Length: 262
Ligand code: MG
Image (cartoon, rainbow, N blue to C red):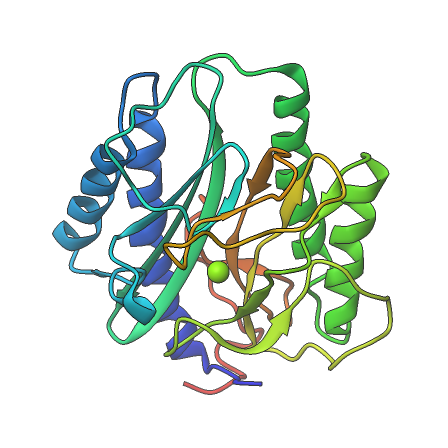
């Protein structure tokens, strides 16, 4: 597992701020009639104008800045000229490289008014993300984060996706360790200060599996269940989880001003 120094975390926080601002610009534009291709343009302009580089674009050949996954698509949907429709939900996944480091973030948003069940799915998935972040503590194990997410989701009667997982992040967009959204308390490696994780619960309405379409990317549920996806890039620190992609301003992290090197 890759351990980052304080100075590296500070650069990652800058990458994460660019990424978050770009996602906020996208969120503000989501409405019936808007196309996901238009959202992609907004995201790319926001990242590039702040000196960043879109991390998804070109990653293993993925063509665009955003993944836009509508309704039953869990992840890796491609922006298109199909307008969003009132009642849709759209998951937006965005990544940014800045000064050699990556940040990763996602959220699922309502298009106009959505069903109460869809709304509950979104709220539950976002809550599960924060429950997982709450378990991302020095001395805990990776399985504690996974289990916290799974328990939260299943208590609400929903299902955690097994086919895709969270991951370490840093100089590479995807680093070890893998972080499943299911697991057992007390298992896996211990979390150490300086580990950075992309924590990203993917949740479906019903127990189902996920397929990949012929474009080799778009990953919808097999049974048509709606899917939601929330993600933050989170650094493990002695002072608790530092949500690098969070709205709060970056904060100093190391007790005693840089105990973890610089
Ligand atoms: Mg990710």
